[in-house]
Amino acid sequence: MTNDWWKNETAYQIWPKSFMDSNGDGIGDIRGITSKLDYLKDLGIGILWISPFYPSPLADEGYDISDYYGIDPRFGTMEDFDELISEASKRSIHIVIDMVLNHCSDEHPWFRKACEDPDGPYGKYFYIMDREGDRLPSNLRSYFGGPVWEPLPGHPDKVYLHLFHKKQPDLNWENPELRAEIYKMMNWWLDKGVSGFRMDAIINIKKVLPFHDYPADRDDGLASVQQMLTEQTGILDFFREMKREVFDKHDTFTVSELFNYKPEDLPALIGTDGGCFSSIFDFSTELCGKSPDGWYHAKPFLTADEYRESVFNSQKAIGEKGFFSNIIENHDEPRGVSHYIRQDLWGARSKAAKKALAGTYFLLRGIPFIYQGQEIGMENISIPSIAQVDDVETLNEYRTALAAGLSEDEALQAVAPFSRDNVRVPMRWTEAPDCGFTTGTPWTPLYASPENNVEDELQDPDSVLNFYKKLIRLRGNEEYWDVLTNGEFLAYNEGQSNIISYFRWNGICTLLIMANFQPECQNIELPDEGKHYEVILTNGAPLHIYGNTATLLGWQFAVVQVR
Image (cartoon, rainbow, N blue to C red; front, side, top):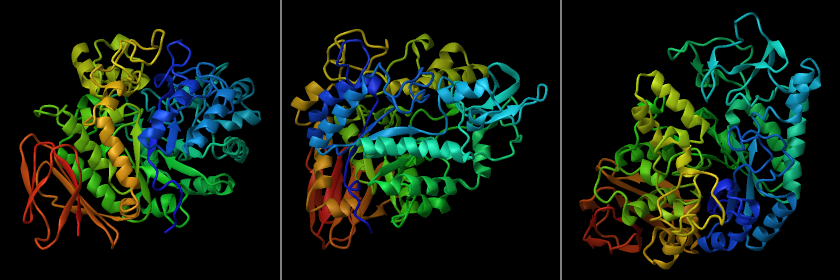
């Protein structure tokens, strides 16, 4: 077992456009992030993942990059970024940046040159195919809806591939010249001082060639990209080359967005002895309850039992093969407290319920990630009109719902719980109308509830924010850091409804983590009557233990050391 520096850190994701605005233009920026480093240090953050800040036309909010070496003027300058790295280093915070390598922007010079000369060297940086009449090279459906093929600008007889937005042409990873350019760029950022990368949509870089049709899975006659990924082979060759050419040359932390990996590939992907990446996100709970038909057919929230089954299966599958990165929300998912807590139960929005969810996911085996605002219990927003929606994926899912026969109001209500706008609104620093985020007019008309803000929660010892601090300090405690980092996960009491409980164990220390996800109290039978049970953390009221029975109040969470 290696002891890499990142294993015991807590990571925090920033959506720069909505985190903190330093110049009053209504858009968050890099200097705004720098101004909040003391807040993040006090919280206990050791890894700071910053979503894209590169130059971009923002067709997909920055995941369409037009210059991999630059800083979008909206967010500041390269000097601002250098200052951020320097100031973060002084606080022992490692900067991790997004690497979007499946596609670039159609405004990137590579693609513009490919349009000028499709048969030239830059044409081979993309998947550009001849068009045979109305027939496309395949019937795959873009992640954002519609065919993955688009006419090449200036060349009506040719089409190019885009698995995402049409302004995000896919890069041709079969071309070694492209790969060399990418590795050069990644090494440049590492030499500049970043500590690693979050690898966006990385499973998609390997295509199944030659392109061909798949069985249609909707009335549009198209097929999900997932069908191609199921057939995919050979992607590990790209990952191993990237590791050799980039990661092994630096002390790099990498976390990958891999929804569709094959379970048998886990050791090769994140194995402790030579895995390609440091970690991958565990998306098992995010996928639970989803539907291939679209958001309108998905479950707006999960029950505690569904969440438990999903995350326990995931923890059992990985065992000690490697390290997951554990989340309950990010820039692509709704607020965790709105999705993983049954909103029809009394107390679902209480501090106790939010802290119970926080403790449950945070102490699983793996690296805990916090998304901005999660630490203060921010919830999904109210979306009054589809006209106010900014997210391209939400707009596509809205159209899908309408095509399925829903009314406009029904379609909005169906997609709102999953909209990425839920988590992309300004961070609430204060209860002021501008959220304390800007002195100008925020870039979006959508706002989160003023009930959750940093200023108030810092002053409340019982707040969700201060509970996250306790969790981070517990994970870093000298007595518990090894069991909570390297210790095994052992599921416990899996058959009791609305109870999530598990052990963390390393042969020396045993911790029992328990949470009750209902308003009514429940008893949990503890495994050994002769043991001594020491309560080391709760989310509020004291935990009562009589003999070998623990009584959990409604929404109560507790960590107990078994001696």
